[in-house]
Image (cartoon, rainbow, N blue to C red):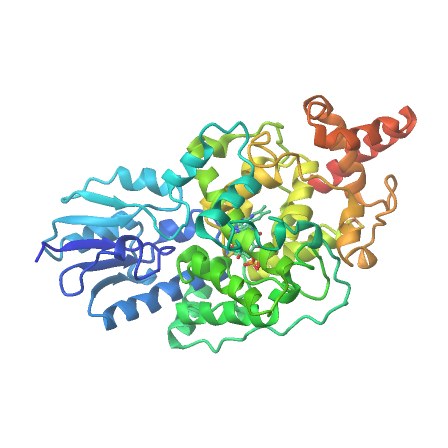
Length: 507
Ligand SMILES: Cc1cc2nc3c(=O)[nH]c(=O)nc-3n(C[C@H](O)[C@H](O)[C@H](O)COP(=O)(O)OP(=O)(O)OC[C@H]3O[C@@H](n4cnc5c(N)ncnc54)[C@H](O)[C@@H]3O)c2cc1C
Ligand code: SF4
């Protein structure tokens, strides 16, 4: 029998069979878990996120105890300020040969842990909850001039044999059915009612604790809607496969007044903390397609997100290193408007997205990218402040996934490492994708004037002020040509109006 290890389990590493727990021995090792102020408060995390993580941690604690482990658990009100403090306290209670933990999901914590001076050595194991290890991703990047997600995704499909036919080719003859994923919804199909959880005593206690301890954080806990166990996460996935998947592809990019989630899966937070396994998720969705329970475009569109985008952004985060967070190639420096914390901009599409983000910690991809992110991009909001906001408000936000998506995809602040062009759009795009414009005080058809949609003039201003950088990008040629086709007088009027709007909306 080997000597005892102290095993540190972080709040986003809750798979009992993976990470630091993979080789843990009941009856020998001791598990340490801690709800600490430093982690709960380094940004103003949404209360849904804090409650979800604390409750999921407490449920895992109980599960591990049932499996025969000793768990040294520090609840928030035990007053441990940092993980190091909790670990030092746990080390004093026994004789351990080492501290074992799984690599954290962000550079901040890697730096922190590598600076700990403890009485035992620290062993850090690789996080095996992802399908592409660091070595796998680095090998994929080798010799490539561009790191495009689509190429990575195809290689992942082949490696894991997902939606691949007997000859090794993509099912249906195409890798990607994105062209079938752009429908606007507009009440064409009824939105299914979501699973409602009855929260047990563990979750009820946590909800009260978070209400008490985090009064200044966003999040309306009366609407708490998350499960906290692997079984609930699996039920959520099954609910999605039975009720949402069929229409997921078609309405993936749709915006709607009536529903914050439409046909989306709501599984990102379960995946990100280890309550769901990404490979199992992809296989279950593939199986649903093979059993004729959904179309190929829906299954492919969904699998692309989990097997492709999710693994790809994580690869980029670790490859780019800590300095990625400082990139700001477009020099965006306008302060984040205070209405990001209230949802009172008076632009209907933005306010709907902001309010549900603040209240529920949820917005789907197109709201994050083409509504809030698009506004931040074209009005030149400060990159760091925008990234911090995204990290704070969403329940699924962890830096490895939040940062590349926000800084790279939405704000183009890495100059095109992730995105082949900036995701900038005028009000016409938002009008096409949903029904917010009909309840808005602005008109998406107007570019200049009190009732003109601000996205329109800001979009042209963005193209004009970065024209020199963008001229070399063939994917922006048409947009720049459309701008240049306008008369000088029209351009002057649009630019002047955009300045007025930027000042008014961001002051
Ligand atoms: C600016 C911006 C910030 C984002 N921040 C986060 C974040 O902090 N955490 C996070 O998990 N996702 C983030 N995303 C990706 C995506 O918006 C969310 O994963 C998704 O909205 C979660 O809702 P869902 O589970 O209903 O997803 P669905 O639309 O049902 O998609 C299925 C799953 O695919 C994965 N996925 C889809 N797109 C991405 C992507 N671009 N990157 C990584 N995984 C993806 C998620 O695990 C998601 O659960 C961000 C996207 C943008 C544009
Ligand atoms: S008019 Fe413009 S601001 Fe208003 S909802 Fe439409 S796109 Fe958004």
